[in-house]
Every structure is written in structure tokens, then in C-alpha cells.
Length: 125
Image 1 (cartoon, rainbow, N blue to C red):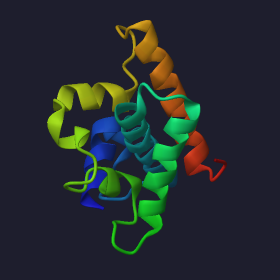
Image 2: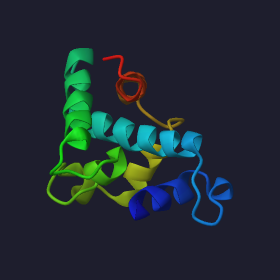
Image 3: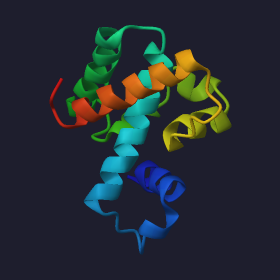
């Protein structure tokens, strides 16, 4: 939960008050984490490949041996190599949706990753 709160603080610091996180803010944090995971794990894959990464992530969240939040699962050590290998600035850029300077191919991958993440969080994959 501490990682979720920290991510929420990054994403929307004014909405985190006294350690209480609204459901909407929690959803936004989970979306940001799942979107980043799908983007970095399957950027060059077609929609089905991105959906597979999202499904693997959600299955891990539901499994007892993993944390029960998307963010904690994605950033758990030794799960997804990009979370330790990439600069935090690049990760934050994707999590915050800062896409203004992206190349067209990366923008397309980002938009697909975001769509897949939203579908996965709504159990519609």
C-alpha cells in the first residue's frame, strides 16, 4: 500500500490527504502502473500481445504469492525488468501520460497500452 500511496502522491498530490486515497485516485494509480507495464513489456507487439501482458499482470495480482495491487505487483523486485533498468524519468513520463514529444510509433503503442490497461482493470479483456 505504501507504493500505491507514493505513486498516488506522484500522480495527484493534492488528492492524497491524511493517508486516505479515494477509489478514483487508486484506480488512476493502478491504471498508470498497468499502462506502463504494458507499454514497456509489449511496446512492439500487436494489441493481442499487449492484452496478454495485461492479463498476466492481473493474474499475478489475484495470485496469493504476489501483492494484491497492480502497482505493487509491477514494481515488485525481479518481476518486470524494465522497472529496474529504465530511468525513473522515462517511467514517470509514461505513467503521467506525457506524450507530446513521442515518436508516432511510440505514441501508437502508448495509446494501445492505455486502452488495454483500461479494459483489463474493468475486467473486459
